[in-house]
Length: 157
Ligand code: SME
Image (cartoon, rainbow, N blue to C red; front, top):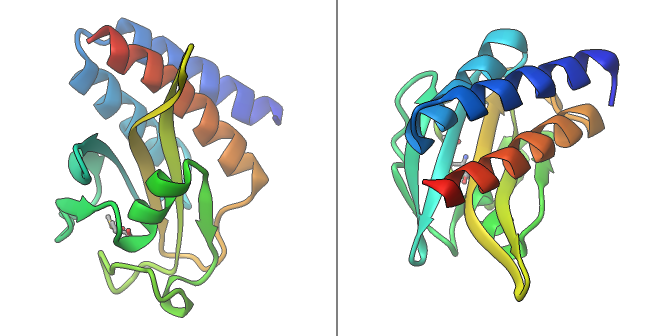
């Protein structure tokens, strides 16, 4: 991680720990991400309820996709594969569910809780950018650290 990324992770971890409840923790995390990183146009969290991803806290324009079945979208793919997905050009990806016509690229990072028995997907962090190919390894590292902090916080709720 770069120094900037590490500083932001520390700041977001502190905000998650200080938040009064899980919803506030998620809201603080996406708020700081969007505020600090100009290429983050929309930042939100989906929570897995059964086989459906349900939109939780977000910053940016309202999304038409408030409920996404696991079999649909880049969001559904990331939760099913339990792996981060980066899409440089959303319009070239047949899985893409359009949120805004300005969106050009996207990163989706699963929020995974590691138990003694395996991995449990609790939800995911979804970031859209109006810039093409906006996301790279630094974003992935940052967001996977934030997802890991959120996984622990969500289990405490
Ligand atoms: N683009 C996502 C849908 C969510 S909106 O970006 C907020 C997808 O393809 O799953």
